[in-house]
Structure formats: C-alpha cells, structure tokens
Picture 1 (cartoon, rainbow, N blue to C red):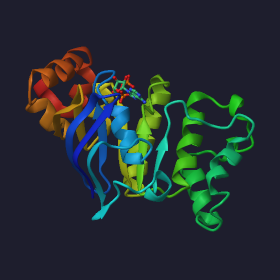
Picture 2 (picture 1 turned 45 degrees about the horizontal axis):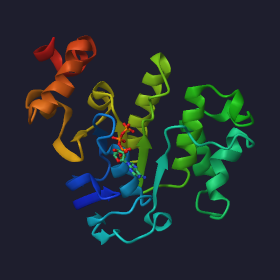
Picture 3 (picture 1 turned 90 degrees about the horizontal axis):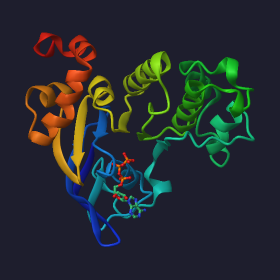
Length: 250
Ligand SMILES: Nc1ncnc2c1ncn2[C@@H]1O[C@H](COP(=O)(O)OP(=O)(O)OP(=O)(O)O)[C@@H](O)[C@H]1O
C-alpha cells in the first residue's frame, strides 16, 4: 500500500500541489489524469523521489519514505521520451541499470521479461533501428529488470498511435496483473485513463477533483470540472466507451 498524506509542493513560492491525500493498493493500476500544468508529473516525480516535498508524508508498506532518497526507494520510472542510450543496442539498454547490481536478476528472470515484451528478435538492434513501440517496450523492459516495487510511467502512450498504442496499453495492463505490480501512469487523455486503470486520480490545478474507479467517475462525476473533462471525451469517443461501460453512454 502506498499512502500519500497531505502532500504539498511549491515551486518558487507558487503552489503546484495542495494537500494531496491518496491510498494506492498493491497491484492496482492508477492513472493520474488532468490538463496540462495540473501537477501530474510533479506528483509522479514526488513518488519516485526525484522531486522533494514542502509538506506531507509518503508511506509505503508502513515505512515513511518522505526523506528516503530516490535510489533507496525501489521505485522505477519509464520516462515519456524513453530516455534510451543511442550508442547502446537494445539488450545493452535493458541491462544497463543492472551493471552495479550483479545477481539481482537471474538469467531466467531476465529472459522472462524479454520474452514477455517480445524483444528477442530486436536485442542486437541499435535504438535508431527500432520503431516507437519497440523503443517503448525496451524502455519498459529496462525498468522491469530493476524489479521495481512500484512502476511509474509518464505519458507512455503519447508518442504512439493506432494498433501500436493499443498493444502497449494492453501490455502495461498485463504487466501489472502478471507481476502484481503497483503501476502509476500519468496521462492527459481521459480515454486512456478510463480504459487502462483500476482507479483514476483526476487533478485540477494541484487539487484532487476525484479519485475512483472508471465506472464511479463516469456514473458519479464529483463536480463540474470532472463532468466537463470526462464527459466531453465520452461524447467524442462514444463507441470506445460504450464497449467498456455498456449502454448507459451509448
Ligand atoms: N522544476 C520546476 N520549477 C518550477 N516550476 C515547475 C517545475 N516543474 C513543474 N513546474 C510547474 O508546476 C506546474 C505543474 O507542472 P507538471 O509538469 O507537474 O504538470 P503536468 O500536469 O504534468 O503537465 P503536462 O501535462 O503539461 O506535462 C506547472 O505550472 C509547471 O510550470
């Protein structure tokens, strides 16, 4: 269980997150959803330990991590632009983080992650030879081999489209299920959040507008902002949402 208690963050005296309280159960997929500048990435980086907080506590499985540095938290992130090393091939990128942690992943486990992400045919390729979806899979594999206690993803689908986007989305869902891995995803796209999460945290201007399951958010939007932000999308993407939630929004 990850608990955020009264988290506040200011940049240059300006409030970016205001008393955020949140509980995420182990194995849940949670999307942080909100418009540009609402504080999603800041919250993700605070959980990771990349960004400090001005107020509040971060508690993971009853341990207070608020002052624990990023490298000791055991959470790992897939960055939006993949952040792969162009001079290394796909395999070298995947194992890069393990270089100082010999023995932390067995050969069998490493192969399991590579198989799971269907990367075997691409291991010797340079990064420039990979498609967007393949780069994303390498980036996810590189993070998974570190055996994170929580997997954080910043806009993992934003650079992808069509079939590739759907396949990465399904892959992320199956990773969370297969490895029982708590997964927190930043997105600005309500459809992505509705179709890939157990719970959605809707942030607006540094405040929580609503935290709940996709069904709760659709059926009982907490306020006008949620209605506007989510229901607008339902109008646009009626068919996709219909497939998920049935006739209410058909
Ligand atoms: N290092 C920083 N220094 C100063 N201000 C920052 C810093 N990082 C973020 N901010 C500000 O904090 C606010 C929230 O930024 P954040 O990146 O968390 O938003 P976001 O919801 O992830 O937006 P986007 O969807 O555009 O990435 C913005 O007003 C941003 O300008």
